[in-house]
Amino acid sequence: MAAKPLSITETTIPGLVLLDLPVHGDNRGWFKENWQREKMVALGLPDFGPVQNNISFNDATGATRGIHAEPWDKYVSVATGRIFGAWVDLREGDTFGTVFTAELGPDSAIFVPRGVGNSYQTLEDNTAYVYLVNAHWSAEAQSEYTFLNLADPTAAIQWPIPLDQAERSAKDLAHPELPDVVPMSPKRTLVLGANGQLGRALREALPAADFAARDRIDLADPGAFDGLRWADYDTVINAAAYTKVDDAETEAGRADAWAANVSGVTRLARACAEHGITLVHVSSDYVFDGTHESYTEEQPFAPLGVYGQTKAAGDAVVQTVPRHYIVRTSWVIGEGGNFVRTMRSLAERGIDPSVVDDQIGRLSFTEDIAAGIVHLLNARPAYGTYNLTNSGPAVSWAQIAQRVYELSGHDAARVTGVSTAEYFAGKEAAPRPLRSTLALAKIEATGFTPRAAEDALAAYLAKA
Image 1 (spheres, one colour):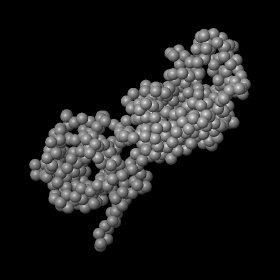
Image 2 (cartoon, helix red, strand yellow):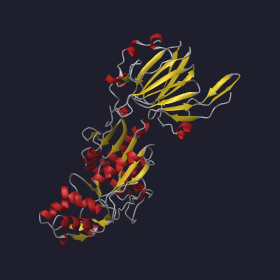
Image 3 (tube, one colour):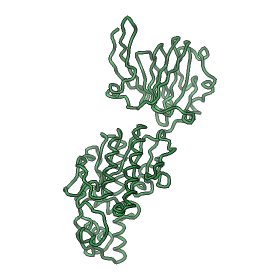
Image 4 (cartoon, one colour):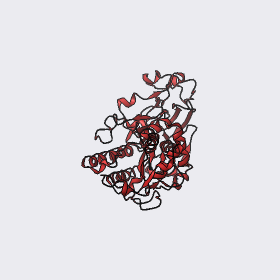
């Protein structure tokens, strides 16, 4: 028997993919690779990570099952016999109610995405229907199924064997018709660090996401994710971290920084890898030592202090997650206490500050970081690390302070520049990188160009 080549075909339902499988036969019978991850993913099939294999044996022609939309992806094939399959999109969206039908035998298979209703009718006796799923079955998960009646007049499926002559279960007979079906909601995005400066900006950018503050999910807590239903999410944005740079140099702070930024991130990364979740992790310029004029995403880590060490270690862990975006930023400004607000307050109170003038970099406004993260999740460029700050020339903290004074209607000359060494003389403080400019060419190549830092600063002060 000559085997046809392995191929996949898109259907009228988004994400529902039909496969032709090579079957190799001789006088003894036949052989096929029913599921071959490397070859199928190379052709465009999602790398969906199956964890359970089920077989439904049907001893008589006409056995009819469905229509069930399940909260996981499934890969359906036939070991023996033939079926007539019918699939209906029961997900929220414009394609709700779309129908696709096809016959499947040992030489074909179909990938059924989460929320697409699945049903079949056997066309031969002794038909073995096989399916791989990427979540373990449970009674709780079954409660999330969405159902459609096999005889729904809107779907109008042309069953080869009339339903009144087919074998159906009592449960299937009771399923609702399309107008009464509650569409399956899409998986959600989980945002950690919901009350931080970036978390607040993400609330504006992703209003439908699930936001978890520290009182709900504390990365430093070994049991932080106990009971979390990972199957509800396709993306996690980790905007949470231990960020007390100076406290991290103390005995207690060092332990706390490692607990949140490394141990907690490791538990998060492991869960995202196991469940096929895209992990967006926010990194820092502190993973570098500040000895270079500018840093690309490929620059080796060289942290100076404990905080930077923990962030570098967390980045290394996240890089093991198959679907990850590390968003590296610097000098973050958003809602809440920050350098810009402090400088404006000093200006308004008549205080003339001394500000370091040998630390060079760019501001990163949380509105722009959030927009960049949304862009990455929508555009889906290659997974990896992306620098994300505002654009424009690199400046010092002292220059930024002077500009805040000017934009607030005060004399910039009231700000005095001092070196880092002078500013921290006699103080217990963590070492800072003197140069924190992050190159933006990589994220700009994906189609996203952040606002100029000068423009973002003026807009921030105008509305803050």
